Length: 120
Image 1 (cartoon, one colour):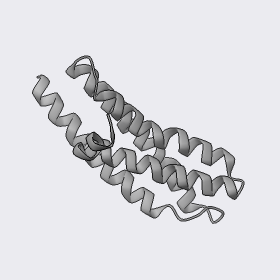
Image 2: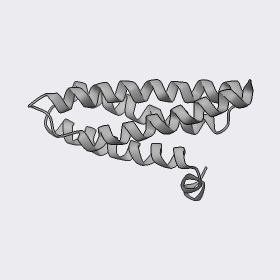
Image 3: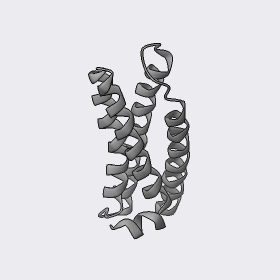
């Protein structure tokens, strides 16, 4: 999937752009020597898009739904780490990333529910 295909698929674009934001945020955490949270955020935040990317070549509708559910779980985990940042006085503001996770969750949930209806 090249850059042109990214822009044509909403969830791929949203998750790819989110991954780039997470990379930047994780790097800012590392500069502040917040390595543990930075590492956790980098893993879960970029995993959302990686699983969505992989779902685009799913072997079946069930496989597609499974990969999207994994993305939704990773989104929840990312939200947890971001909430820790938000509520800790020692961490930078993460509100803009929390808003992005809400958008990702809504789109993922819609895709999953719609795909389940199609498969039933």
